Image (cartoon, rainbow, N blue to C red; front, side):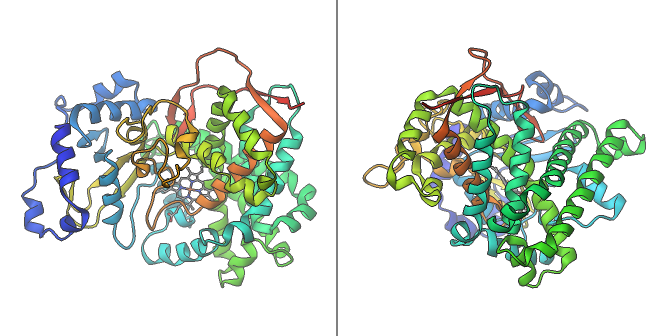
Length: 486
Ligand code: HEM
């Protein structure tokens, strides 16, 4: 089955297949599916693979068994899974004008029950397109890094490194990363200078918000293990705790943004730019509060994986330190663009994509890998599998940031299919915070590496495993000790 599907993906060009008449697509076979038991389907296999926290292992095994495209019903979700990089790209090319993705059930229910209007991630159709243009116009432009992102990310990274206690295990690194992610966004909203002026006044509300966002994540992850509607109907503690955590985070987020609005005119940050672009105060609050929520889990956990991998690989830290010590890398702009720092980030996100499954509902019937996929069918891209496949990345299990450096002919040294790793997705609905996330992570590892060597506090203990709690998180706390460089 593997080779059959591969031949398909090689033999057929995208363009030719996009032009296939509908009738021809209807003649294609359906994707292969595992044999399930009556009533329970494949649920027992999923339980055997480690249940929901190890869904990525279950899906990986299925790809090995059935090939790069298969269909499965996991609980109530019926989806076509895709792990071939060319087919993943094809899915994005067919996503339509208003790409539709899946939103956690508990969040949808919360928004419905409390009539809450949320930000970009939750929007659809023309409303989504309008605000997407506004946000992408600020955050994803070529000039956004030097004009909007660099100075705030650098200021917060310097503070972070300065606050590390040399030789001491960093206490509760996970919470520290949430605070960093929130600080960065507040600094970007205000601009570095205004942020510097207001930093001490904003410290307490920012810290509270970071804690509240962290709590929402914990409660959402707990609730994701059961149907949210049922939990609400039965007034289960999981639903009640989720609601109070979300309300607290939204209230604190709204209060913080309301406080920033009168301040932002004096700065050159994102918030002022949104208002200048004609976004109303209410819409700005709605968009920005959701940016604060979207930035928290994603960058905090990505950075935790990154720190863990660096601490495990002292030789990479030394090479990075050497590169950062060159005069050419002295300025933050150069440090943020340093190829090795970028390689470290890409490699960490390849091995530990914070969103290991990307979802799209295709608007038309489609040919995916030689199989018929009907309009409206949920398609799930298996990033964990594609990112760890030897066919796409030689020595796929190894943390090897240098694979992303280019040789004299301009090719990556150790990458066969770069689009097999898509941690920020691609296309019109890809991550609007990608440039921000890359810049803030690059500058934080630069500031830490310049001053410290990171050491694993738990020595030779086995590496924490990747488990799914809505996003990929380490199975136990990451504990590192920063040792000062002499
Ligand atoms: C390492 C960090 C991050 C990763 C890996 C990441 C990943 C992603 C992915 C995969 C998506 C696409 C979801 C889909 O296709 O349905 C997404 C969407 C999004 N991300 Fe990020 N993200 C990161 C950081 C951020 C940050 C810092 C922000 C805030 C500035 C942000 C804001 C958003 C928003 C608002 C969307 C929804 C975009 C839309 O629907 O048009 N992300 N992110």
